[in-house]
Image (cartoon, rainbow, N blue to C red; front, side):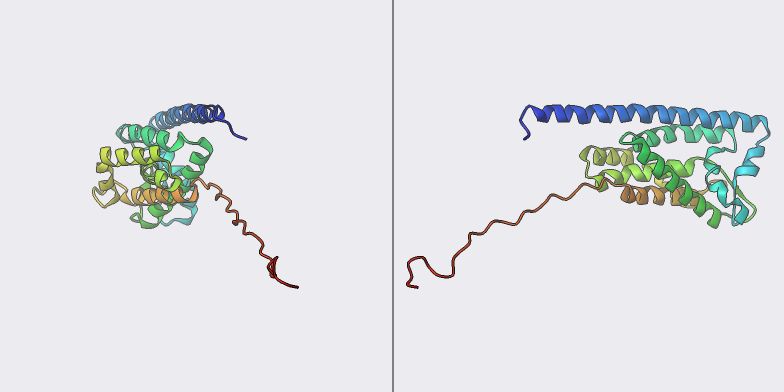
Length: 223
């Protein structure tokens, strides 16, 4: 039996759990950026050889595994600087409700974004960069609240859509050096991830109403 005094305690436990996950998400994103910048430092010192070794080459079958390594690489210091801020913001918002779910969403986004780039890039090109993940997290944050039915996440999605509306322009062809293909498929991956990894709440049990049993023969009728 639930008493009135149990409700605040339950709400407090939920809030504490969410804060704990938010702290994990913060450190996960800090750690991710540290790794990306260390890789960039080594890559720059090495003459960006990693880009050609682990970047995604369009329609080369042997390059398919690189859909998971290409997001870790950047082609210049300006490239990683441009991606770092949005990656941290959208990544944190995507992860603060659960780091395990966030990791699954990340794999889905990376695969779809990488396959889109691998399929649609011009022949002879190499694709690298975390912008596909950025757009994937952006799409995920936009729809997660709708699929999970969390009001606060719906508000966050609306605010992000308004504050970063310029990101939608990157889903369409622009500069030759910008992979709109990776952006578009990463964004679609985030939308799909919002649906696939939505909170599945158990449906409330419906009990059939009790009907009184009526005898076939009225009590006062002759037998």
